[in-house]
Length: 184
Image (cartoon, rainbow, N blue to C red; front, side, top):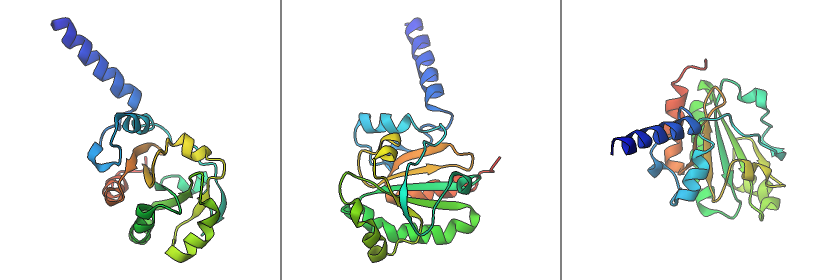
């Protein structure tokens, strides 16, 4: 029995190390991850440097890696046909207005294997105010393990992914916590 407890402690410690120092810091209930596969995929990104974004066709400006340094970055992976994605846009705009001066950057990533051709009209019709781009080859979707829409990811000022798969109503809670942290 003693060996089993020691084994369990070592296993938990090893898992924590592989997931990163910040993995699991926000409740799983804040995500859309309803199964272990999605939660595991997203958790594998948390606590690690943010994956690259391979995007094109920017509207409302571009966001380059240097634009994200020392900033809290929200990456909103959305589809033009997704109702919850469209419903979240006004809050994203409000959040940007509220926290941009404090160091918030929001990047909209129009992904999905269908509907990307409608991004320009969607930006106009829905009043998206933050930089938004296409993921034409779905490379960003794959790198960020997007399995549903919207998928929100939040990256801290050091470029470390802190949460992936957040439900829209929980994004601001994570943003506020990360904006309060020092950049160095």
